[in-house]
Amino acid sequence: MTICLAGLLLFSMATSILSDETVTALSSNTTTAERKKLPELYQDNGDGFIVIGHRGAKAYYPENTMSSFRGAVKRGAEMLELDVQLSKDGVPVVFHDAKINRTTNGNSEFLSKFTLGELKQFDAGSWFNKKFTGERIPTLEEVLKYGKNRIALNIEIKTEAVTDKLHDGVEEESLDLVKEYGMSRHVLFSSFDYRAVKHLKELDPQIPVAILYNWEQSGELMPSQLVEKYDADVFNCSRRELSKAWVEDLKSHHIPFFVYTINQKRYMKSVIKKGASGIFTNKPDVLKKVASKLLSVE
Ligand code: G3P
Ligand code: MG
Image 1 (cartoon, rainbow, N blue to C red):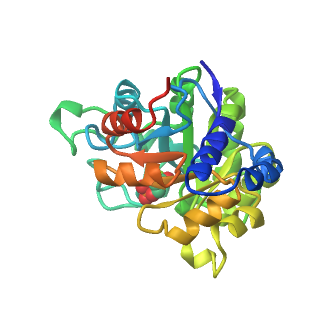
Image 2 (cartoon, rainbow, N blue to C red):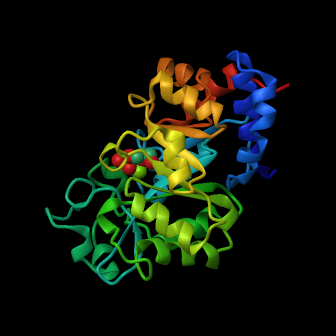
């Protein structure tokens, strides 16, 4: 069943009520909430909370590989997070680090120095476990093909790939692919580089985009001010960054927030109780259980 993440806003409104905000304040901010462009999930249990598989299910599979994405889906992820940058010949590929040595059998070189054909020669699985030998670096296109009609995607544009250019960069190349696969309503873009957030919204104001909090680019601005400034829809930050003041600011402006990367039950519980609309985890199966218990839907 396809469920619009607008439900998440209703959920955060509900948690706001639980945390003593008035119903009047909620309804007066409905317009702000309605302005947000939020992705639709392909499946959801109606609890208004998203289990996001970080680089797939990184605890059990080699990160950012097709095995990891398939495994995350099997283990209950409702959205997959993946990192995207460009190969030397301009193809969006799914890879986290700037250099290839940690998660492939390649040496300490920058990913951007290799063409797609060259990148496909590397083994992206055996470093994690021999049983994943032969795993390849996926392209964004391969993941879109897999995700379509199955699972929503959070496409994180890596800072390494971002430039000042609006056209022909990683943002436009990735957005074009998303459109080609008819996935526009089922993706959430995000980036630590706010230029990418701006570019994506300039290229398509309808595409859902999250600010990934970066203190160096934020000055003294609060989350709601950043979201407003960059015309973003969602605010993403780390568990440690999420202060009480930020939670209050986000909730009072009815801005959905997703928190990374949480693998321990006690932190999952506390962040869900704070009203997060989603959590990035390397263990989607664990988060799924925790969320089901806390947010049981009749
Ligand atoms: O998007 C959430 C999280 O993935 C951001 O950090 O370094 O794991 O890409 P990183
Ligand atoms: Mg990431």
